[in-house]
Length: 96
Image (cartoon, rainbow, N blue to C red; front, top):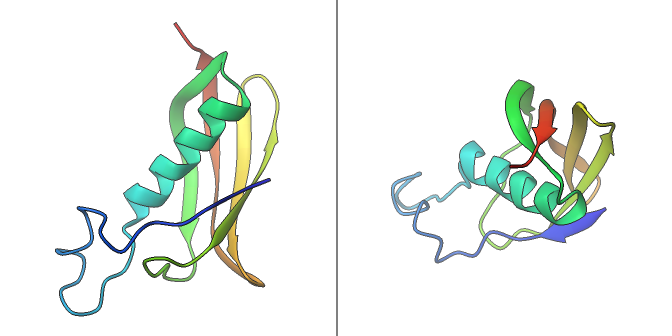
């Protein structure tokens, strides 16, 4: 389990959405990629098998990330407080 926040000064936020910033899904997936690389340095994401965004994530909102993984697949869950905000499954491969 790891925690992360997306800072309110992140460059993706001004256009997503002006006046009411919401963290884009691709930024959340990048946080998953970074945490996965740290937790399993010999593996990388080969593809996104499925992903579902359930709740919006706001700038500076604390999120926790949980992995359940093997050598070729990884399930992840992103939660904020008691809310599930995103979940998905990734295909993994050896990092080159």
